Image 1 (cartoon, rainbow, N blue to C red):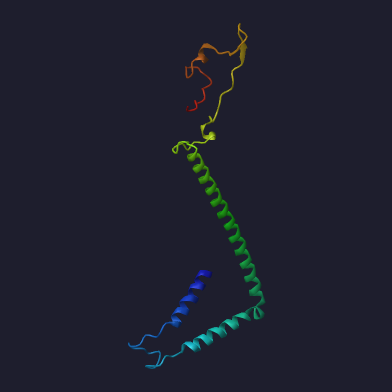
Image 2 (tube, rainbow, N blue to C red):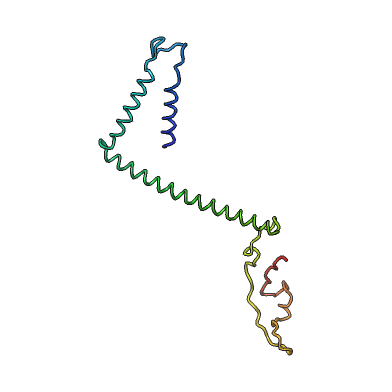
Length: 162
């Protein structure tokens, strides 16, 4: 809304300062003499601004509501600016991190993070039993020894890429 008010003000000022178009039929002003001179228009504008300065003394309730509205808009603008600044800062940090990774020789096409490479789910660990040599080995039934075999109850997690 403030944009529209500002635009109207500046367009009005530009139209006021433009010279009048002569020629053509004009039923608003006598021929050869403008209806309002630029000095009279400037005087009227300055008196309107002076009158607007006394608006709060005539309408205190409207000024109080307007001040509250301006304060609310200012708070929202501040919150939006903080959000935008945080987002831009995050993007800059990410770009610097990527540039540092490229400078160290990391492949540019690798966009997977450590979290992306970790498996989403892992099955329960099999209990270990001591062997004759003393080393612990997982105890598995012949059916469980073959991953994906019929009757296998626990699927193996996906392997990490090398």
